[in-house]
Length: 232
Image 1 (spheres, rainbow, N blue to C red):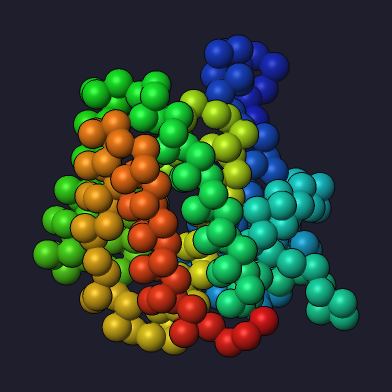
Image 2: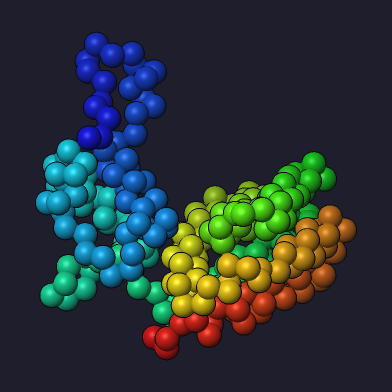
């Protein structure tokens, strides 16, 4: 069951903090998609989800609309709403957008970010290295990778850019699950110096080197992933 909204006698400050039901449903379904609990092609039935979450179909529909906006679910003829199955074309488009965002962000970050803000980008790199030396899963390591890219773009201070980047990272997570299923070696051969090269260039305030490092990162990522997808 979803958490109940506070009644009319509840504390106003508490009421303000309670998210709408559709958002709670959205976050839970989204988490299950990105965790692989709901695999690509899984059908989402409004009545079943409503019963499961203890709510009417209205919040379910709104949650599904938001999931579709993020590209995590799709409406298919004669099949209804299903978890998206992403292809090589999706990979190319997602990575092209992410690369473009980071090439643009690098100029702004170098110009405006403080040294202390750039130090914050060190944390996910260290966490990634630590995770790679432990028994962490491929997706735990990837989570630190996403954290680096989320922080990097976030330093540009552009809310629209940040929102687009978050959507692309969600789709990247889905793409990585498809790729890792096709090729388990992806879990063990992640190269992390590419992130260090980006950070070093940002710290040096060297725009050209930062953009070269971003481009090198995406060429490396594409080489690892494209072979894992059927044409689409």
